[in-house]
Image (cartoon, rainbow, N blue to C red; front, side):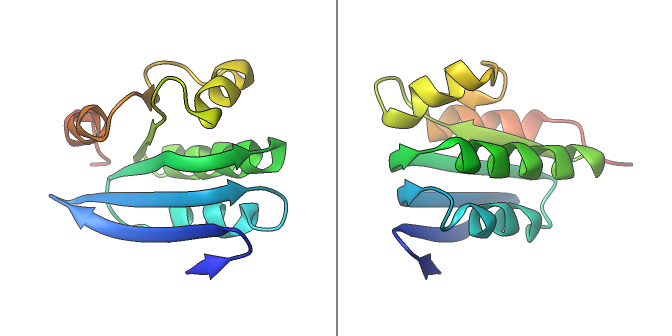
Length: 119
């Protein structure tokens, strides 16, 4: 799906839904990001924002809503945001912890596979 300036792709990796974002996440497409997270059915979801060049407060809010939605269903969300990327600083300032925001896709996948799931 390509909305505005953000490309959203989803794939399954060993039972973990991996959503990759590329471009800018802002008011014009933040709902699309939230909807992509909500549309998953896997117990573990990884949101890879490595290729995001801009992330505003509406994007952070959408990701937080997606995270809360998954948590309410006893599912997990992990975010890939390597140090030095534009999103890394934004997540830190917004208060996302190191248990949710990870530096590599491999680390996020491992965390998603280890996370407890709903009974």
